[in-house]
Length: 161
Image (cartoon, rainbow, N blue to C red; front, side):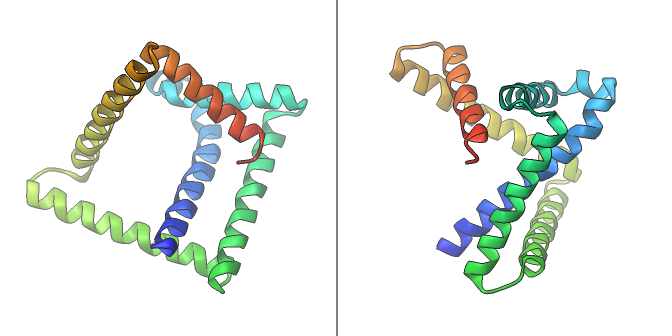
């Protein structure tokens, strides 16, 4: 179980690193910037953090990538394998997930993209329901809760977590 958590952590970290690198290309394209406000929000967050640190966004991205590599190195060392082997395991796990998606989509008679959209919408609905519940418990609005969560994410990125 602990190994699964580690692999999941690495996968999430790889996704985060991928997001950072793809954001660079997406932000250069005004059409994609309008399509996905998350990219804009992420870019703004990076700019905010870079400004606070007194560095450029590119320098911040370099720092985040270096931090990610360090995490991969630590995980690989704990498993007794190389970073390349760990990346290969992650890639294999991703390929396995893609195969499962393709199989499920075929069974449902829809495309993989349609399945991904369905799953994304289901996760989003569950997430929104949890946010509403959490906001009620705290006695605040969902927007206030989202602002708190965003602030916490910013703080974690600043502190290297």
